[in-house]
Amino acid sequence: MATLHEYLFVSGLLFAIGLAGVIARRNIIVIFMCLEMMLSAANLTLVAFSRFNTAETGLPDYDGQMLVFFIITVAAAEVAVGLAIIVALYRARQTVNVNDLTSLRG
Amino acid sequence: MPTLFFYFFAILAISGAVALVVFRNPVSSALSMVASFVGFAGLFIGLNAYFIGVIQILVYAGAIMVLFIFIIMLLDLKKEESKKFPITTVIGALLIPGLFMLQLVGIFGNFDDKKHQALDLPASAEHYQEEAPKIAATLSGANGEAPSLPDVNLIGQKLFTEFNFPFQVMGILLLVATIGVVVLSKRSPSTSASDQ
Image 1: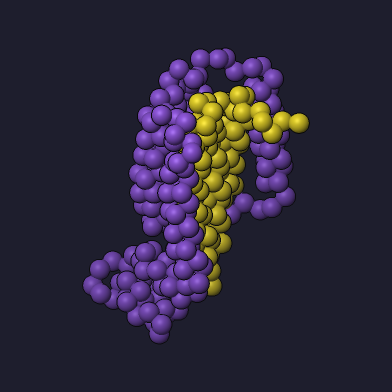
Image 2: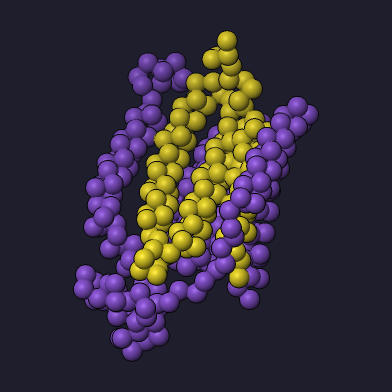
Protein backbone atom coordinates (compact mmCIF):
# COMPACT_ATOMS: atom_id res chain seq x y z
CA MET A 1 0.00 0.00 0.00
CA ALA A 2 1.09 3.54 -0.66
CA THR A 3 2.47 5.43 2.33
CA LEU A 4 1.67 8.94 3.55
CA HIS A 5 4.84 10.35 2.01
CA GLU A 6 3.92 9.00 -1.42
CA TYR A 7 0.52 10.68 -1.28
CA LEU A 8 2.06 13.94 -0.06
CA PHE A 9 4.69 13.77 -2.80
CA VAL A 10 2.06 13.25 -5.52
CA SER A 11 -0.04 16.10 -4.16
CA GLY A 12 3.01 18.38 -3.88
CA LEU A 13 4.01 17.52 -7.44
CA LEU A 14 0.52 18.31 -8.73
CA PHE A 15 0.58 21.61 -6.81
CA ALA A 16 3.99 22.41 -8.34
CA ILE A 17 2.74 21.62 -11.86
CA GLY A 18 -0.25 23.89 -11.27
CA LEU A 19 2.08 26.63 -10.00
CA ALA A 20 4.30 26.20 -13.08
CA GLY A 21 1.22 26.63 -15.25
CA VAL A 22 0.19 29.79 -13.42
CA ILE A 23 3.70 31.22 -13.96
CA ALA A 24 4.25 30.12 -17.55
CA ARG A 25 0.88 30.42 -19.26
CA ARG A 26 -0.40 33.71 -20.64
CA ASN A 27 -4.00 32.71 -21.33
CA ILE A 28 -6.07 33.78 -18.33
CA ILE A 29 -8.51 30.85 -18.67
CA VAL A 30 -5.66 28.30 -18.58
CA ILE A 31 -4.19 30.15 -15.57
CA PHE A 32 -7.55 29.77 -13.89
CA MET A 33 -7.61 26.03 -14.66
CA CYS A 34 -4.13 25.69 -13.15
CA LEU A 35 -5.43 27.42 -10.00
CA GLU A 36 -8.16 24.78 -9.79
CA MET A 37 -5.44 22.13 -10.10
CA MET A 38 -3.61 23.67 -7.13
CA LEU A 39 -6.80 23.66 -5.05
CA SER A 40 -7.38 19.99 -5.86
CA ALA A 41 -3.80 19.14 -4.92
CA ALA A 42 -4.36 20.77 -1.52
CA ASN A 43 -7.52 18.65 -1.19
CA LEU A 44 -5.46 15.51 -1.80
CA THR A 45 -3.13 16.49 1.05
CA LEU A 46 -6.09 17.01 3.39
CA VAL A 47 -7.69 13.67 2.48
CA ALA A 48 -4.36 11.86 2.87
CA PHE A 49 -3.85 13.31 6.36
CA SER A 50 -7.48 12.52 7.21
CA ARG A 51 -6.96 8.87 6.25
CA PHE A 52 -3.55 8.33 7.85
CA ASN A 53 -4.29 10.17 11.12
CA THR A 54 -7.32 8.25 12.29
CA ALA A 55 -9.65 9.81 14.88
CA GLU A 56 -10.18 8.16 18.27
CA THR A 57 -13.07 6.21 16.76
CA GLY A 58 -10.57 4.35 14.56
CA LEU A 59 -12.16 5.78 11.41
CA PRO A 60 -10.58 8.44 9.14
CA ASP A 61 -10.62 11.89 10.73
CA TYR A 62 -13.66 13.35 8.99
CA ASP A 63 -12.81 16.94 10.00
CA GLY A 64 -10.29 16.98 7.13
CA GLN A 65 -12.87 15.73 4.67
CA MET A 66 -15.33 18.41 5.82
CA LEU A 67 -12.70 21.01 4.95
CA VAL A 68 -12.32 19.39 1.51
CA PHE A 69 -16.09 19.52 1.06
CA PHE A 70 -16.11 23.25 1.85
CA ILE A 71 -13.10 23.87 -0.41
CA ILE A 72 -14.89 22.20 -3.32
CA THR A 73 -17.99 24.35 -2.65
CA VAL A 74 -15.93 27.55 -2.52
CA ALA A 75 -14.05 26.47 -5.67
CA ALA A 76 -17.34 26.04 -7.53
CA ALA A 77 -18.50 29.52 -6.47
CA GLU A 78 -15.07 30.95 -7.30
CA VAL A 79 -15.09 29.44 -10.81
CA ALA A 80 -18.55 30.85 -11.51
CA VAL A 81 -17.58 34.37 -10.40
CA GLY A 82 -14.13 34.21 -11.99
CA LEU A 83 -15.42 33.12 -15.38
CA ALA A 84 -18.07 35.86 -15.26
CA ILE A 85 -15.26 38.37 -14.61
CA ILE A 86 -13.25 36.91 -17.52
CA VAL A 87 -16.25 37.26 -19.83
CA ALA A 88 -16.74 40.87 -18.68
CA LEU A 89 -13.01 41.49 -19.24
CA TYR A 90 -13.16 40.00 -22.72
CA ARG A 91 -16.13 42.23 -23.55
CA ALA A 92 -14.23 45.31 -22.39
CA ARG A 93 -10.77 44.54 -23.84
CA GLN A 94 -11.26 41.76 -26.48
CA THR A 95 -8.34 39.75 -25.06
CA VAL A 96 -7.62 36.99 -22.55
CA ASN A 97 -3.83 37.31 -22.82
CA VAL A 98 -2.42 38.59 -19.53
CA ASN A 99 0.45 40.36 -21.36
CA ASP A 100 -2.07 42.73 -22.91
CA LEU A 101 -3.68 43.58 -19.56
CA THR A 102 -1.18 46.11 -18.25
CA SER A 103 -3.43 48.87 -16.86
CA LEU A 104 -2.22 48.23 -13.31
CA ARG A 105 1.48 48.14 -14.22
CA GLY A 106 3.30 51.03 -12.52
CA MET B 1 -2.95 -4.56 -6.13
CA PRO B 2 -4.01 -1.33 -4.31
CA THR B 3 -0.45 -0.04 -4.79
CA LEU B 4 -0.82 -0.63 -8.53
CA PHE B 5 -4.03 1.40 -8.54
CA PHE B 6 -2.31 4.16 -6.59
CA TYR B 7 0.44 4.44 -9.18
CA PHE B 8 -2.02 4.22 -12.08
CA PHE B 9 -4.20 7.07 -10.77
CA ALA B 10 -1.21 9.12 -9.61
CA ILE B 11 0.36 8.90 -13.07
CA LEU B 12 -3.01 9.71 -14.66
CA ALA B 13 -3.37 12.81 -12.47
CA ILE B 14 0.21 13.98 -13.03
CA SER B 15 0.21 13.40 -16.80
CA GLY B 16 -3.14 15.19 -17.06
CA ALA B 17 -1.71 18.13 -15.11
CA VAL B 18 1.41 18.25 -17.33
CA ALA B 19 -0.77 18.14 -20.44
CA LEU B 20 -2.90 20.97 -19.01
CA VAL B 21 0.17 23.19 -18.75
CA VAL B 22 1.82 22.16 -22.03
CA PHE B 23 -1.06 22.08 -24.55
CA ARG B 24 -1.51 25.31 -26.54
CA ASN B 25 -5.15 24.84 -27.37
CA PRO B 26 -7.33 25.76 -24.34
CA VAL B 27 -9.85 23.03 -25.24
CA SER B 28 -7.11 20.35 -25.09
CA SER B 29 -6.01 21.83 -21.77
CA ALA B 30 -9.55 21.62 -20.40
CA LEU B 31 -9.99 18.00 -21.51
CA SER B 32 -6.63 16.90 -20.09
CA MET B 33 -7.71 18.55 -16.84
CA VAL B 34 -10.78 16.25 -16.83
CA ALA B 35 -8.39 13.27 -17.10
CA SER B 36 -6.37 14.70 -14.22
CA PHE B 37 -9.47 15.08 -12.06
CA VAL B 38 -10.47 11.47 -12.76
CA GLY B 39 -7.02 10.53 -11.43
CA PHE B 40 -7.66 12.67 -8.34
CA ALA B 41 -10.99 10.93 -7.78
CA GLY B 42 -9.28 7.54 -8.01
CA LEU B 43 -6.73 8.63 -5.39
CA PHE B 44 -9.51 9.88 -3.09
CA ILE B 45 -11.37 6.56 -3.39
CA GLY B 46 -8.11 4.75 -2.64
CA LEU B 47 -8.00 6.75 0.60
CA ASN B 48 -11.49 5.51 1.62
CA ALA B 49 -12.95 8.98 0.90
CA TYR B 50 -15.68 7.70 -1.41
CA PHE B 51 -17.93 10.73 -1.04
CA ILE B 52 -15.11 13.18 -1.82
CA GLY B 53 -14.13 11.07 -4.84
CA VAL B 54 -17.67 11.14 -6.18
CA ILE B 55 -18.15 14.88 -5.73
CA GLN B 56 -14.72 15.44 -7.29
CA ILE B 57 -16.11 13.83 -10.45
CA LEU B 58 -19.54 15.47 -10.20
CA VAL B 59 -18.46 19.01 -9.31
CA TYR B 60 -15.03 19.36 -10.93
CA ALA B 61 -15.11 17.03 -13.95
CA GLY B 62 -18.82 17.64 -14.45
CA ALA B 63 -19.95 21.14 -13.56
CA ILE B 64 -16.76 23.22 -13.45
CA MET B 65 -15.19 21.80 -16.61
CA VAL B 66 -18.42 22.23 -18.58
CA LEU B 67 -18.39 25.87 -17.47
CA PHE B 68 -14.77 26.25 -18.62
CA ILE B 69 -15.38 24.62 -22.00
CA PHE B 70 -18.51 26.72 -22.42
CA ILE B 71 -16.57 29.94 -21.82
CA ILE B 72 -13.73 28.83 -24.14
CA MET B 73 -16.31 28.16 -26.83
CA LEU B 74 -18.08 31.46 -26.12
CA LEU B 75 -14.90 33.53 -26.42
CA ASP B 76 -13.57 31.57 -29.44
CA LEU B 77 -9.96 31.47 -28.23
CA LYS B 78 -8.29 29.32 -30.88
CA LYS B 79 -6.23 32.06 -32.48
CA GLU B 80 -4.88 33.43 -29.21
CA GLU B 81 -2.24 30.78 -28.42
CA SER B 82 0.19 31.06 -31.30
CA LYS B 83 3.11 32.73 -29.55
CA LYS B 84 5.99 30.68 -28.16
CA PHE B 85 6.69 30.56 -24.45
CA PRO B 86 9.42 33.14 -23.64
CA ILE B 87 12.54 31.49 -22.24
CA THR B 88 12.54 33.57 -19.03
CA THR B 89 9.04 32.47 -18.03
CA VAL B 90 9.90 28.82 -18.80
CA ILE B 91 12.96 29.09 -16.52
CA GLY B 92 10.83 30.71 -13.80
CA ALA B 93 8.13 28.09 -14.21
CA LEU B 94 10.67 25.28 -13.79
CA LEU B 95 12.75 26.93 -11.06
CA ILE B 96 10.12 28.06 -8.54
CA PRO B 97 8.08 24.79 -8.47
CA GLY B 98 11.39 22.86 -8.55
CA LEU B 99 12.55 24.69 -5.43
CA PHE B 100 9.16 24.03 -3.86
CA MET B 101 9.49 20.29 -4.54
CA LEU B 102 13.03 20.27 -3.11
CA GLN B 103 11.74 21.93 0.04
CA LEU B 104 8.91 19.38 0.28
CA VAL B 105 11.29 16.42 -0.07
CA GLY B 106 13.52 18.04 2.56
CA ILE B 107 10.58 18.23 4.96
CA PHE B 108 9.83 14.52 4.41
CA GLY B 109 13.15 13.67 6.04
CA ASN B 110 12.07 15.43 9.24
CA PHE B 111 9.01 13.41 10.09
CA ASP B 112 8.28 9.71 10.06
CA ASP B 113 6.45 8.06 7.22
CA LYS B 114 3.13 6.42 8.05
CA LYS B 115 2.10 3.05 6.72
CA HIS B 116 -1.38 2.51 5.34
CA GLN B 117 -3.36 0.66 8.00
CA ALA B 118 -6.60 -1.17 7.33
CA LEU B 119 -9.61 0.28 9.17
CA ASP B 120 -10.98 -1.84 12.00
CA LEU B 121 -14.65 -1.20 11.26
CA PRO B 122 -16.38 -3.46 13.87
CA ALA B 123 -14.16 -1.99 16.63
CA SER B 124 -15.18 1.58 15.79
CA ALA B 125 -18.88 0.69 15.69
CA GLU B 126 -19.24 1.05 19.47
CA HIS B 127 -18.43 4.78 19.28
CA TYR B 128 -21.56 5.30 17.21
CA GLN B 129 -23.80 2.84 19.09
CA GLU B 130 -25.69 5.54 20.99
CA GLU B 131 -25.82 8.59 18.74
CA ALA B 132 -26.22 6.82 15.38
CA PRO B 133 -27.29 3.17 15.61
CA LYS B 134 -27.61 2.77 11.82
CA ILE B 135 -24.01 3.86 11.25
CA ALA B 136 -22.92 1.43 13.99
CA ALA B 137 -24.92 -1.37 12.33
CA THR B 138 -23.25 -0.77 8.96
CA LEU B 139 -19.83 -0.59 10.59
CA SER B 140 -20.24 -3.83 12.54
CA GLY B 141 -22.16 -5.66 9.83
CA ALA B 142 -25.14 -6.21 12.15
CA ASN B 143 -27.64 -5.78 9.32
CA GLY B 144 -26.56 -9.06 7.71
CA GLU B 145 -24.11 -7.53 5.23
CA ALA B 146 -20.34 -7.44 5.38
CA PRO B 147 -18.96 -4.53 7.51
CA SER B 148 -18.49 -1.46 5.32
CA LEU B 149 -17.58 2.18 5.82
CA PRO B 150 -20.76 4.32 5.65
CA ASP B 151 -18.80 7.26 4.33
CA VAL B 152 -21.74 9.41 3.24
CA ASN B 153 -23.64 8.80 6.50
CA LEU B 154 -20.60 9.76 8.58
CA ILE B 155 -19.99 12.94 6.58
CA GLY B 156 -23.68 13.81 6.70
CA GLN B 157 -23.81 13.29 10.45
CA LYS B 158 -20.76 15.51 10.95
CA LEU B 159 -22.03 18.14 8.50
CA PHE B 160 -25.43 18.55 10.14
CA THR B 161 -24.23 18.46 13.75
CA GLU B 162 -20.70 19.84 14.22
CA PHE B 163 -20.45 21.83 10.98
CA ASN B 164 -24.03 23.04 10.71
CA PHE B 165 -23.19 26.73 10.90
CA PRO B 166 -20.40 26.65 8.26
CA PHE B 167 -22.75 24.63 6.08
CA GLN B 168 -25.37 27.39 6.20
CA VAL B 169 -22.71 30.06 5.62
CA MET B 170 -21.73 28.06 2.53
CA GLY B 171 -25.32 28.22 1.32
CA ILE B 172 -25.26 32.02 1.63
CA LEU B 173 -21.90 32.09 -0.18
CA LEU B 174 -23.36 30.16 -3.12
CA LEU B 175 -26.36 32.51 -3.18
CA VAL B 176 -24.09 35.57 -3.19
CA ALA B 177 -21.96 34.00 -5.95
CA THR B 178 -25.05 33.33 -8.05
CA ILE B 179 -26.28 36.91 -7.67
CA GLY B 180 -22.76 38.21 -8.36
CA VAL B 181 -22.51 36.21 -11.58
CA VAL B 182 -25.87 37.53 -12.78
CA VAL B 183 -24.87 41.12 -11.97
CA LEU B 184 -21.45 40.71 -13.65
CA SER B 185 -22.76 39.15 -16.83
CA LYS B 186 -25.61 41.64 -17.23
CA ARG B 187 -24.69 44.39 -19.65
CA SER B 188 -25.20 47.83 -18.19
CA PRO B 189 -27.32 50.09 -20.47
CA SER B 190 -24.46 52.48 -21.22
CA THR B 191 -21.94 49.82 -22.36
CA SER B 192 -24.47 47.82 -24.38
CA ALA B 193 -25.32 50.97 -26.37
CA SER B 194 -21.66 51.42 -27.35
CA ASP B 195 -21.18 47.71 -28.14
CA GLN B 196 -24.00 47.38 -30.62
